[in-house]
Image (cartoon, rainbow, N blue to C red; front, side):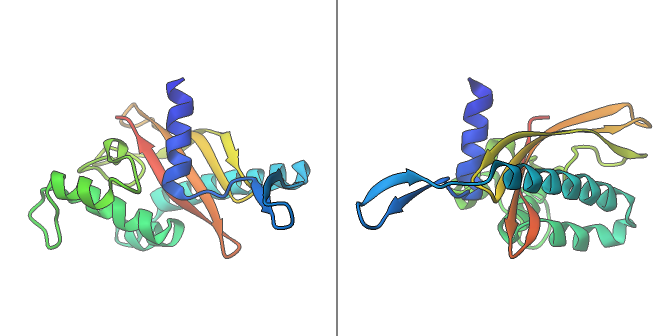
Length: 182
């Protein structure tokens, strides 16, 4: 039950489209006819993109990671995660926890933001991040996907389990949310 509540919350946070639409002639909701093969193909493409993007981020020089993060996330998620990373830090633009929750609480579940941690993993340092698991968990419409992702760092003997929401905007996949529980 909790799993479905988290997935439902994620869809609300990333503003996914519903597969229903209103028939203008009758003013009733009807389910759009979507080609299941197209949706599955799109989900597979999103999965491959996500795995590749995660690996590219962690293999990049640390000086390039912020730019990569900005290129693979939605604008809102990038700003949200940047704010979460800097909560109560002594840096320009840093928010208190209360201010962070007020600013983002209507759009994201701030409980799973990963306060004071980096993008995708909670470790400060890592040796070699691998994507051990990346499985489609849910689809909303044909442009939003939620993946169960498990990242592993064998050097640090750490595993990071994440729910990652991916949306498609302007023919480009982007990470729209990351649920961090550790």
